[in-house]
Length: 289
Ligand SMILES: C[S@@+](CC[C@H](N)C(=O)[O-])C[C@H]1O[C@@H](n2cnc3c(N)ncnc32)[C@H](O)[C@@H]1O
Image (cartoon, rainbow, N blue to C red; front, side, top):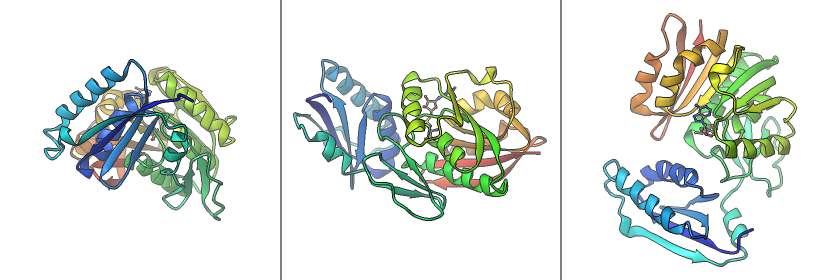
């Protein structure tokens, strides 16, 4: 464990929490914590601090147009030499319910024992997908819907952009006999592997960095929590992966983009079953005809 950390505290418009915390995780922060009206992020203190500060400031300037109340003057950097840092960060992560089917809990918390809910253990902060983000939660709720409609019979599934592996784990826990989980980020794959092991589903989930176009099978359930742009780019390849009458769950879509994303899937082949909106994010459930 590193002995010192660069801590960023940022007071911002809560509407910008998701955008800012996603950026900080992608920039390499292993710990992003959202407090009342503040985002705190921790980075390992190193000579790279200078470029982290520069990138954060550039990012904040970039999103200033979207969130005009976000002022750089509310940004505070500190070097922490706190050996108990790990514990103080841990305090902010508690088990959370997602939909009606899941609890998502960090590994240092005792698994809550609640009937009818599956417990998913995720190490927070290392890769996208801790169960707190609206897009992850949207996908998990639709996984629950789909599993119910498949009557919990076994099925196979594909998770594109698995991140922490959370959706692949959710699928495995709700009846998938085999899940193909892919990500183009080697760090995410490493984190996902550990989370699969921790949840006892490593045998059920085939994890790889394989490109979508190289996957030849089709699946009764396909999940892709990416971005609107990435989904539209991959739309042709994605459609081919969904088996007849199969389900396609899409997220990472900003609300105003949802119509455009739907438009990239032929209405002759797909119908929209459900649309879920949380904050600025849309999640879609489509079914192949
Ligand atoms: C928003 S995260 C979603 C993580 C997790 N599935 C969830 O729902 O919380 C998107 C993930 O997709 C990966 N990704 C982005 N584009 C991809 C692509 N074309 N193929 C595979 N993975 C991709 C990123 O590396 C990242 O881990």
